[in-house]
Image (cartoon, rainbow, N blue to C red; front, side, top):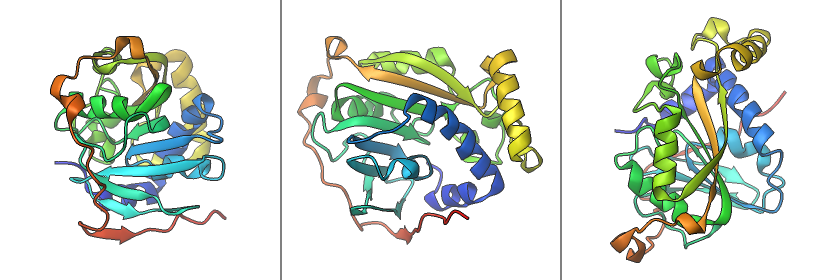
Length: 249
């Protein structure tokens, strides 16, 4: 069972959640300084990470798994979120230039099916970044955050899952070296702990970040999966909470 969307929203509204977002976004922005003109898919719960790209991106869609639930997230073109079935995303092949997956893989009932769908909707030579709990980190062992839910990953496990469907991992990084405690969520301490962790204990980050490219020459044989009919997004068939991006003071 996936983490409920309201619990995810509550976490990111807390000091600990804001600290987690800030530290992960710091690494994400080093990989993607901007997404100008790109069609972007966020799978899982990506609103807190993609809000800063809204102005430049051509289009951003937030695809939220049905078992998680969805928030009515507003972008420059109106509501940009929808509920989806993760083994049958409601998008045509090669729709997106860039894909971000956060809170997506750890609780996937069938990881290979999900990864195959993300590969299908990504354009050739398109990029994907997956942010997932690190099996060796402290955040995967704590119930204080949604990063402690589901299955955490090692780098080798994530590499195998991506290569199995045709993604070619190119860049690895980590984030969240501080313990998942509110007392350690202050900006100054976090920045110091991130720099220390990156230099001294890079394998003990709370999160793994990996960027990969869709390579056509390693296209897997998906068999009957490739013939499946693309479903429609389920707008409004489940309760959707109202959501307004937090104001910045």
